[in-house]
Amino acid sequence: MTHNRRFENSAEHQEVCALLPWYVNDTLADTERQKVDAHLGGCAVCRDDLAVHKRILEGINAQPALDYMPVASLKRLQARLDVAQAQTALPPIPPLEPSRSDAPWPGWMAASIAAMAVAIGLLAADRWVQFEVRATKPNYQTVTTSIPRPQGEVIRAVFSPNITLVELQTILDEAQLKIVSGPTEAGVYSLASNSTLTVRSSLALLRQHSTVRFAEETLAEPESGNSP
Amino acid sequence: MTPLAKNSPKERDSALLVAIAAGDRRALEELYLSYHRRLARFLSRFTPRYENIEEIINDTFMVVWQNAKDFRNASQVSTWVIGIAYRTALKSFRRQKNHHLARSLEDYPEQTVDPTSDAEVNDWLKHGLSRLPIEQRLTLELAYHMGHSLEEIAAITDCPVGTVKARMFHAREKLRQYLPALGGGPSELPARIG
Image (tube, each protein chain N blue to C red):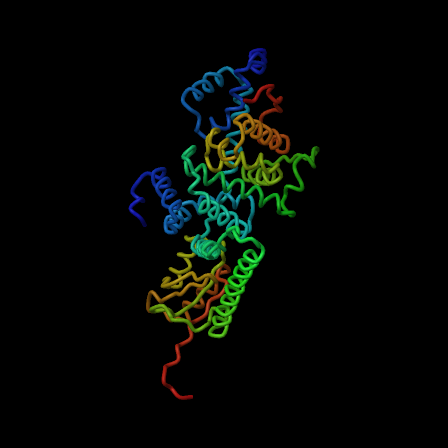
Protein backbone atom coordinates (compact mmCIF):
# COMPACT_ATOMS: atom_id res chain seq x y z
CA MET A 1 0.00 0.00 0.00
CA THR A 2 2.87 2.31 0.90
CA HIS A 3 4.28 1.37 -2.44
CA ASN A 4 1.05 2.46 -4.15
CA ARG A 5 0.85 5.73 -2.20
CA ARG A 6 4.33 6.57 -3.35
CA PHE A 7 3.19 6.04 -6.94
CA GLU A 8 -0.07 7.96 -6.52
CA ASN A 9 1.77 11.12 -5.61
CA SER A 10 4.27 10.87 -8.39
CA ALA A 11 4.11 12.71 -11.69
CA GLU A 12 4.63 9.39 -13.43
CA HIS A 13 1.52 7.94 -11.81
CA GLN A 14 -0.60 10.89 -12.87
CA GLU A 15 0.74 10.75 -16.40
CA VAL A 16 0.10 7.02 -16.72
CA CYS A 17 -3.36 7.35 -15.16
CA ALA A 18 -4.33 9.86 -17.87
CA LEU A 19 -2.98 7.64 -20.66
CA LEU A 20 -4.86 4.49 -19.66
CA PRO A 21 -7.87 5.02 -22.01
CA TRP A 22 -5.51 5.04 -24.99
CA TYR A 23 -3.53 2.12 -23.60
CA VAL A 24 -6.83 0.22 -23.62
CA ASN A 25 -7.77 1.23 -27.17
CA ASP A 26 -4.24 0.40 -28.34
CA THR A 27 -3.36 3.75 -29.92
CA LEU A 28 -0.41 4.77 -27.73
CA ALA A 29 3.02 5.26 -29.26
CA ASP A 30 5.54 2.56 -28.38
CA THR A 31 7.45 4.73 -25.90
CA GLU A 32 4.26 5.64 -24.01
CA ARG A 33 3.08 2.06 -24.04
CA GLN A 34 6.35 0.87 -22.55
CA LYS A 35 6.12 3.54 -19.86
CA VAL A 36 2.59 2.39 -18.95
CA ASP A 37 3.64 -1.28 -18.95
CA ALA A 38 6.53 -0.56 -16.61
CA HIS A 39 4.32 1.46 -14.23
CA LEU A 40 1.46 -1.05 -14.14
CA GLY A 41 3.75 -3.73 -12.76
CA GLY A 42 4.16 -1.82 -9.49
CA CYS A 43 0.91 0.18 -9.14
CA ALA A 44 -2.26 -1.56 -8.01
CA VAL A 45 -4.25 1.67 -8.30
CA CYS A 46 -3.50 1.91 -12.01
CA ARG A 47 -4.26 -1.77 -12.49
CA ASP A 48 -7.69 -1.15 -10.93
CA ASP A 49 -8.19 1.86 -13.19
CA LEU A 50 -7.15 -0.19 -16.18
CA ALA A 51 -9.80 -2.80 -15.32
CA VAL A 52 -12.47 -0.07 -15.19
CA HIS A 53 -11.44 1.31 -18.58
CA LYS A 54 -11.49 -2.17 -20.10
CA ARG A 55 -14.95 -2.77 -18.65
CA ILE A 56 -16.28 0.47 -20.12
CA LEU A 57 -14.74 -0.29 -23.52
CA GLU A 58 -16.23 -3.79 -23.53
CA GLY A 59 -19.62 -2.45 -22.47
CA ILE A 60 -19.65 0.20 -25.20
CA ASN A 61 -18.69 -2.26 -27.90
CA ALA A 62 -21.13 -4.89 -26.65
CA GLN A 63 -24.02 -2.64 -27.58
CA PRO A 64 -25.43 -3.59 -30.99
CA ALA A 65 -24.61 -1.25 -33.83
CA LEU A 66 -27.26 -0.30 -36.35
CA ASP A 67 -26.47 0.00 -40.02
CA TYR A 68 -28.42 2.36 -42.21
CA MET A 69 -28.71 2.41 -45.97
CA PRO A 70 -27.08 5.55 -47.30
CA VAL A 71 -28.63 5.76 -50.77
CA ALA A 72 -31.82 7.65 -49.89
CA SER A 73 -29.83 10.01 -47.63
CA LEU A 74 -27.34 10.66 -50.41
CA LYS A 75 -30.17 11.53 -52.77
CA ARG A 76 -31.41 14.14 -50.32
CA LEU A 77 -27.88 15.58 -50.05
CA GLN A 78 -27.71 15.74 -53.84
CA ALA A 79 -31.00 17.64 -53.91
CA ARG A 80 -29.59 20.15 -51.39
CA LEU A 81 -26.45 20.55 -53.49
CA ASP A 82 -28.59 21.13 -56.60
CA VAL A 83 -30.44 23.92 -54.83
CA ALA A 84 -27.21 25.44 -53.49
CA GLN A 85 -25.58 25.32 -56.92
CA ALA A 86 -28.64 26.82 -58.62
CA GLN A 87 -28.56 29.70 -56.14
CA THR A 88 -24.89 30.41 -56.76
CA ALA A 89 -25.40 30.13 -60.53
CA LEU A 90 -27.73 33.15 -60.61
CA PRO A 91 -25.82 36.00 -62.32
CA PRO A 92 -24.78 38.64 -59.82
CA ILE A 93 -25.95 42.14 -60.47
CA PRO A 94 -22.90 43.99 -61.77
CA PRO A 95 -21.50 46.66 -59.46
CA LEU A 96 -22.54 50.13 -60.30
CA GLU A 97 -19.87 52.30 -61.77
CA PRO A 98 -19.68 55.79 -60.37
CA SER A 99 -21.23 58.29 -62.74
CA ARG A 100 -18.92 60.81 -64.26
CA SER A 101 -21.62 63.20 -65.32
CA ASP A 102 -22.14 66.49 -63.60
CA ALA A 103 -25.47 65.32 -62.24
CA PRO A 104 -24.69 61.88 -60.68
CA TRP A 105 -28.16 60.82 -59.50
CA PRO A 106 -29.73 60.19 -62.97
CA GLY A 107 -27.01 57.54 -63.71
CA TRP A 108 -27.46 55.92 -60.29
CA MET A 109 -31.20 55.88 -60.75
CA ALA A 110 -30.92 54.33 -64.20
CA ALA A 111 -28.71 51.57 -62.83
CA SER A 112 -31.14 50.91 -59.97
CA ILE A 113 -34.04 50.69 -62.37
CA ALA A 114 -32.06 48.30 -64.56
CA ALA A 115 -31.19 46.11 -61.57
CA MET A 116 -34.81 46.07 -60.43
CA ALA A 117 -35.94 45.19 -63.95
CA VAL A 118 -33.51 42.26 -64.03
CA ALA A 119 -34.71 41.06 -60.61
CA ILE A 120 -38.38 41.35 -61.59
CA GLY A 121 -37.61 39.56 -64.85
CA LEU A 122 -35.90 36.70 -63.03
CA LEU A 123 -38.77 36.46 -60.54
CA ALA A 124 -41.34 36.41 -63.31
CA ALA A 125 -39.38 33.78 -65.24
CA ASP A 126 -39.09 31.66 -62.10
CA ARG A 127 -42.84 31.94 -61.42
CA TRP A 128 -43.60 31.07 -65.04
CA VAL A 129 -41.39 28.00 -64.92
CA GLN A 130 -42.97 26.88 -61.65
CA PHE A 131 -46.43 27.46 -63.13
CA GLU A 132 -45.52 25.41 -66.18
CA VAL A 133 -44.24 22.58 -64.03
CA ARG A 134 -47.35 22.63 -61.85
CA ALA A 135 -49.58 22.79 -64.88
CA THR A 136 -48.00 19.78 -66.56
CA LYS A 137 -47.65 17.41 -63.65
CA PRO A 138 -48.44 17.23 -59.94
CA ASN A 139 -45.74 18.37 -57.54
CA TYR A 140 -45.81 15.04 -55.76
CA GLN A 141 -45.63 11.39 -56.56
CA THR A 142 -47.35 8.56 -54.82
CA VAL A 143 -46.04 5.06 -54.65
CA THR A 144 -48.71 4.03 -57.13
CA THR A 145 -48.26 6.93 -59.53
CA SER A 146 -47.96 5.71 -63.06
CA ILE A 147 -44.30 6.08 -63.89
CA PRO A 148 -42.22 4.01 -66.28
CA ARG A 149 -41.91 0.59 -64.70
CA PRO A 150 -38.47 -0.92 -64.32
CA GLN A 151 -38.01 -4.15 -66.25
CA GLY A 152 -39.64 -7.05 -64.44
CA GLU A 153 -41.11 -5.02 -61.56
CA VAL A 154 -43.97 -6.85 -59.86
CA ILE A 155 -44.03 -5.24 -56.42
CA ARG A 156 -43.29 -1.81 -54.98
CA ALA A 157 -42.25 -1.70 -51.35
CA VAL A 158 -41.09 0.71 -48.69
CA PHE A 159 -38.95 -0.51 -45.79
CA SER A 160 -38.26 0.98 -42.40
CA PRO A 161 -35.45 3.55 -42.62
CA ASN A 162 -33.74 1.66 -39.78
CA ILE A 163 -33.55 -1.63 -41.67
CA THR A 164 -30.05 -3.00 -42.14
CA LEU A 165 -28.71 -4.32 -45.41
CA VAL A 166 -28.58 -7.81 -43.97
CA GLU A 167 -32.19 -7.67 -42.79
CA LEU A 168 -33.33 -6.33 -46.16
CA GLN A 169 -31.54 -9.05 -48.07
CA THR A 170 -32.92 -11.75 -45.74
CA ILE A 171 -36.49 -10.53 -46.29
CA LEU A 172 -36.01 -10.40 -50.07
CA ASP A 173 -34.46 -13.87 -50.14
CA GLU A 174 -37.36 -15.24 -48.12
CA ALA A 175 -39.92 -13.65 -50.45
CA GLN A 176 -37.78 -14.68 -53.45
CA LEU A 177 -37.60 -11.15 -54.78
CA LYS A 178 -34.80 -8.98 -56.07
CA ILE A 179 -34.37 -5.21 -56.32
CA VAL A 180 -34.60 -3.91 -59.87
CA SER A 181 -34.74 -0.22 -59.02
CA GLY A 182 -34.78 2.21 -56.11
CA PRO A 183 -34.99 3.45 -53.58
CA THR A 184 -36.63 6.57 -54.93
CA GLU A 185 -36.52 9.80 -52.93
CA ALA A 186 -39.64 8.53 -51.19
CA GLY A 187 -37.79 5.31 -50.31
CA VAL A 188 -39.73 3.12 -52.77
CA TYR A 189 -38.07 -0.02 -54.09
CA SER A 190 -39.08 -1.80 -57.29
CA LEU A 191 -38.92 -5.54 -56.81
CA ALA A 192 -38.94 -8.33 -59.37
CA SER A 193 -39.66 -11.98 -58.83
CA ASN A 194 -36.65 -14.19 -58.44
CA SER A 195 -38.42 -17.54 -58.79
CA THR A 196 -41.64 -19.22 -59.76
CA LEU A 197 -43.30 -18.14 -56.52
CA THR A 198 -46.50 -16.23 -57.24
CA VAL A 199 -46.50 -12.48 -56.72
CA ARG A 200 -49.28 -12.87 -54.19
CA SER A 201 -47.21 -15.31 -52.14
CA SER A 202 -44.17 -13.04 -52.23
CA LEU A 203 -46.37 -10.15 -51.17
CA ALA A 204 -47.73 -12.14 -48.23
CA LEU A 205 -44.21 -13.05 -47.12
CA LEU A 206 -43.11 -9.41 -47.30
CA ARG A 207 -46.08 -8.20 -45.29
CA GLN A 208 -45.23 -10.52 -42.40
CA HIS A 209 -42.32 -8.28 -41.48
CA SER A 210 -42.78 -5.21 -39.32
CA THR A 211 -39.88 -3.52 -41.15
CA VAL A 212 -41.92 -3.56 -44.37
CA ARG A 213 -43.89 -0.34 -44.20
CA PHE A 214 -45.66 -0.74 -47.51
CA ALA A 215 -45.86 -3.43 -50.16
CA GLU A 216 -48.23 -3.56 -53.11
CA GLU A 217 -48.42 -5.49 -56.30
CA THR A 218 -47.67 -3.23 -59.25
CA LEU A 219 -50.81 -2.50 -61.19
CA ALA A 220 -50.83 -3.74 -64.76
CA GLU A 221 -50.12 -0.90 -67.18
CA PRO A 222 -53.10 -0.05 -69.34
CA GLU A 223 -52.60 -1.01 -72.94
CA SER A 224 -52.43 2.01 -75.23
CA GLY A 225 -55.06 2.50 -77.88
CA ASN A 226 -57.86 0.73 -76.00
CA SER A 227 -61.12 2.52 -76.07
CA PRO A 228 -63.05 2.67 -72.83
CA MET B 1 -16.13 3.47 -58.53
CA THR B 2 -13.17 5.58 -59.56
CA PRO B 3 -9.60 4.30 -60.08
CA LEU B 4 -8.83 5.95 -56.73
CA ALA B 5 -10.37 2.98 -55.01
CA LYS B 6 -7.23 0.89 -55.37
CA ASN B 7 -5.12 3.34 -53.31
CA SER B 8 -4.82 3.24 -49.52
CA PRO B 9 -7.76 4.81 -47.65
CA LYS B 10 -5.67 7.89 -46.73
CA GLU B 11 -4.49 8.41 -50.31
CA ARG B 12 -7.96 7.79 -51.64
CA ASP B 13 -9.50 10.31 -49.21
CA SER B 14 -6.88 12.95 -50.09
CA ALA B 15 -7.41 12.45 -53.83
CA LEU B 16 -11.17 12.58 -53.41
CA LEU B 17 -10.92 15.82 -51.44
CA VAL B 18 -8.78 17.40 -54.16
CA ALA B 19 -11.44 16.40 -56.70
CA ILE B 20 -14.21 17.74 -54.44
CA ALA B 21 -12.37 21.05 -54.15
CA ALA B 22 -12.41 21.18 -57.96
CA GLY B 23 -16.19 20.73 -57.93
CA ASP B 24 -16.44 16.99 -58.65
CA ARG B 25 -19.82 15.82 -57.34
CA ARG B 26 -19.01 12.15 -57.98
CA ALA B 27 -16.00 12.42 -55.69
CA LEU B 28 -18.21 13.87 -52.96
CA GLU B 29 -20.65 10.99 -53.39
CA GLU B 30 -17.83 8.45 -53.11
CA LEU B 31 -16.48 10.09 -49.97
CA TYR B 32 -20.03 10.25 -48.56
CA LEU B 33 -20.64 6.55 -49.14
CA SER B 34 -17.29 5.61 -47.60
CA TYR B 35 -17.99 7.57 -44.39
CA HIS B 36 -21.74 7.12 -44.00
CA ARG B 37 -21.64 3.80 -42.18
CA ARG B 38 -18.96 4.87 -39.71
CA LEU B 39 -20.64 8.18 -38.93
CA ALA B 40 -24.15 6.71 -38.75
CA ARG B 41 -23.01 4.01 -36.31
CA PHE B 42 -21.27 6.61 -34.17
CA LEU B 43 -24.20 9.03 -34.17
CA SER B 44 -26.75 6.28 -33.53
CA ARG B 45 -25.15 5.93 -30.10
CA PHE B 46 -26.45 9.41 -29.25
CA THR B 47 -29.80 9.55 -30.98
CA PRO B 48 -32.14 6.76 -32.02
CA ARG B 49 -33.80 8.87 -34.73
CA TYR B 50 -32.38 8.34 -38.19
CA GLU B 51 -33.73 11.71 -39.33
CA ASN B 52 -31.34 13.38 -36.86
CA ILE B 53 -28.46 11.17 -37.92
CA GLU B 54 -29.06 11.89 -41.59
CA GLU B 55 -29.36 15.61 -40.94
CA ILE B 56 -26.01 15.68 -39.13
CA ILE B 57 -24.27 13.60 -41.82
CA ASN B 58 -25.71 15.65 -44.69
CA ASP B 59 -24.89 18.94 -42.93
CA THR B 60 -21.36 17.61 -42.47
CA PHE B 61 -20.96 16.86 -46.16
CA MET B 62 -22.42 20.21 -47.19
CA VAL B 63 -19.56 21.75 -45.16
CA VAL B 64 -17.09 19.32 -46.77
CA TRP B 65 -18.35 20.38 -50.21
CA GLN B 66 -18.13 24.09 -49.41
CA ASN B 67 -14.78 24.02 -47.57
CA ALA B 68 -12.78 21.30 -49.35
CA LYS B 69 -10.71 23.95 -51.10
CA ASP B 70 -9.58 25.28 -47.70
CA PHE B 71 -8.23 21.91 -46.50
CA ARG B 72 -4.47 22.29 -46.05
CA ASN B 73 -3.38 18.75 -45.09
CA ALA B 74 -2.69 19.84 -41.50
CA SER B 75 -4.45 16.64 -40.45
CA GLN B 76 -5.74 13.49 -42.10
CA VAL B 77 -8.88 13.87 -44.18
CA SER B 78 -10.68 11.44 -41.87
CA THR B 79 -9.84 13.58 -38.82
CA TRP B 80 -11.05 16.69 -40.66
CA VAL B 81 -14.34 15.07 -41.74
CA ILE B 82 -15.02 13.58 -38.31
CA GLY B 83 -14.14 16.93 -36.72
CA ILE B 84 -16.81 18.62 -38.84
CA ALA B 85 -19.28 15.87 -37.89
CA TYR B 86 -18.34 16.31 -34.21
CA ARG B 87 -19.08 20.05 -34.25
CA THR B 88 -22.28 19.55 -36.25
CA ALA B 89 -23.44 16.85 -33.84
CA LEU B 90 -22.56 18.94 -30.81
CA LYS B 91 -24.70 21.82 -32.10
CA SER B 92 -27.54 19.46 -32.96
CA PHE B 93 -27.52 17.71 -29.58
CA ARG B 94 -27.45 21.03 -27.76
CA ARG B 95 -30.45 22.18 -29.78
CA GLN B 96 -32.51 19.14 -28.83
CA LYS B 97 -34.47 20.18 -25.81
CA ASN B 98 -35.56 16.66 -25.07
CA HIS B 99 -32.03 15.35 -25.05
CA HIS B 100 -30.80 13.67 -21.91
CA LEU B 101 -28.32 16.47 -21.41
CA ALA B 102 -30.99 18.20 -19.38
CA ARG B 103 -30.54 15.46 -16.76
CA SER B 104 -26.93 14.72 -16.08
CA LEU B 105 -25.45 12.30 -13.60
CA GLU B 106 -24.70 15.27 -11.35
CA ASP B 107 -28.45 15.70 -10.86
CA TYR B 108 -28.50 12.32 -9.11
CA PRO B 109 -25.53 12.49 -6.72
CA GLU B 110 -26.85 9.82 -4.39
CA GLN B 111 -28.04 7.44 -7.06
CA THR B 112 -25.98 4.34 -7.66
CA VAL B 113 -26.95 1.02 -9.16
CA ASP B 114 -25.64 -2.39 -8.37
CA PRO B 115 -26.32 -4.83 -11.21
CA THR B 116 -25.01 -8.35 -11.00
CA SER B 117 -24.67 -9.90 -14.46
CA ASP B 118 -22.50 -8.60 -17.29
CA ALA B 119 -25.61 -7.94 -19.38
CA GLU B 120 -27.09 -5.83 -16.59
CA VAL B 121 -23.86 -3.91 -16.18
CA ASN B 122 -23.91 -3.18 -19.92
CA ASP B 123 -27.50 -1.96 -19.73
CA TRP B 124 -26.73 0.34 -16.82
CA LEU B 125 -23.56 1.50 -18.51
CA LYS B 126 -25.61 2.56 -21.52
CA HIS B 127 -27.89 4.43 -19.14
CA GLY B 128 -24.96 6.06 -17.39
CA LEU B 129 -23.36 7.09 -20.69
CA SER B 130 -26.53 8.83 -21.78
CA ARG B 131 -26.36 11.01 -18.67
CA LEU B 132 -22.79 12.22 -19.07
CA PRO B 133 -22.16 15.79 -20.22
CA ILE B 134 -22.09 15.63 -23.99
CA GLU B 135 -18.43 16.67 -24.41
CA GLN B 136 -17.31 13.94 -21.99
CA ARG B 137 -19.43 11.32 -23.66
CA LEU B 138 -18.27 12.27 -27.15
CA THR B 139 -14.65 12.02 -25.99
CA LEU B 140 -15.27 8.62 -24.46
CA GLU B 141 -17.06 7.32 -27.56
CA LEU B 142 -14.40 8.71 -29.90
CA ALA B 143 -11.80 6.70 -27.98
CA TYR B 144 -13.69 3.51 -27.19
CA HIS B 145 -16.19 3.21 -30.05
CA MET B 146 -14.24 4.86 -32.88
CA GLY B 147 -10.77 3.89 -31.62
CA HIS B 148 -9.15 7.31 -32.02
CA SER B 149 -5.83 8.22 -30.45
CA LEU B 150 -5.45 11.02 -27.92
CA GLU B 151 -3.94 13.35 -30.51
CA GLU B 152 -6.66 12.58 -33.06
CA ILE B 153 -9.38 13.34 -30.52
CA ALA B 154 -7.64 16.62 -29.68
CA ALA B 155 -7.67 17.49 -33.40
CA ILE B 156 -11.28 16.36 -33.92
CA THR B 157 -12.57 18.30 -30.92
CA ASP B 158 -10.20 21.21 -31.49
CA CYS B 159 -9.07 21.06 -27.86
CA PRO B 160 -5.69 20.78 -26.14
CA VAL B 161 -4.59 17.24 -25.29
CA GLY B 162 -4.89 18.09 -21.57
CA THR B 163 -8.58 18.95 -22.00
CA VAL B 164 -9.22 15.62 -23.68
CA LYS B 165 -7.49 13.77 -20.85
CA ALA B 166 -9.49 15.71 -18.25
CA ARG B 167 -12.80 14.98 -20.00
CA MET B 168 -11.97 11.31 -20.11
CA PHE B 169 -10.98 11.30 -16.44
CA HIS B 170 -14.22 12.96 -15.33
CA ALA B 171 -16.33 10.69 -17.55
CA ARG B 172 -14.76 7.59 -16.02
CA GLU B 173 -15.16 8.93 -12.47
CA LYS B 174 -18.84 9.74 -12.95
CA LEU B 175 -19.54 6.35 -14.45
CA ARG B 176 -17.72 4.62 -11.62
CA GLN B 177 -19.60 6.54 -8.96
CA TYR B 178 -22.89 5.76 -10.67
CA LEU B 179 -22.03 2.16 -11.32
CA PRO B 180 -19.75 0.69 -8.63
CA ALA B 181 -19.90 -2.68 -10.41
CA LEU B 182 -17.41 -1.26 -12.90
CA GLY B 183 -14.84 -1.81 -10.15
CA GLY B 184 -11.99 0.18 -8.66
CA GLY B 185 -12.18 2.86 -6.00
CA PRO B 186 -12.65 6.60 -6.33
CA SER B 187 -9.61 8.41 -7.65
CA GLU B 188 -8.43 11.87 -6.83
CA LEU B 189 -8.22 14.30 -9.68
CA PRO B 190 -4.60 14.32 -10.73
CA ALA B 191 -2.93 17.62 -9.93
CA ARG B 192 -1.71 17.81 -13.49
CA ILE B 193 -3.41 16.36 -16.53
CA GLY B 194 -1.43 17.32 -19.54
